[in-house]
Length: 287
Image (cartoon, rainbow, N blue to C red; front, side, top):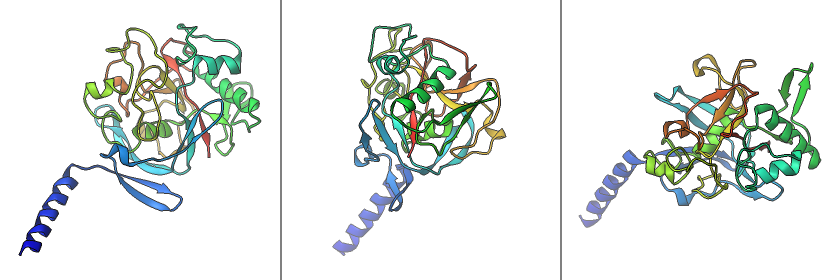
């Protein structure tokens, strides 16, 4: 009788916890694994590789992209290849070391993210850094006007929009990787409420489960994609509109961006020639 009672209690406990849990399926080398994303401390997804830019390994996997009322419709996206993503936004020092100049409004702060870079600047940085490290170039310019990306190359590039959101979420289904409230956002990023009208050194806030910092706030991050309405696009990790007016920006920033702009799912964009003190980027590499 006592044993039966214990079994009933355990069953009730399991069902109660199941109702409030969220899970993430990740495809690993040893097969598909399901994680409880409510337990932040239980998951170590990747490894850090050393170099001029610290990178974190992001595994292949499947996730729900978008969020009702922010970026609709919510849809399933398959990230088919593992990749490395910069642990931090590219800093002023890193940009200066590669390009030889610093365009930032807040210049003189080497560990702050570089800003006032347009999309073309970010692409150029990726190619120049690849050259410096004797890596394949991902980007080529065709006809003097059209940039192409070869995702099979092993050099530096910008993330796709799907790669960015997948990496930001790190298995979470909430507004931010730290939760749903604005106080939980404040622990993860610099935005209009707490930025004191400036950028901040990278890596001061809470990292997500992949070990990435400043995915919320500090500076907007350029992505490879042309901006488009979700419903018009078939999604996986390397499909996107092949033309448009705006390139995608993700993550929100310190400048006039409220909590909504910093949501994991928030979709924005600007002309690729735009330069503002709120625009920066981070890099990725195909594994």
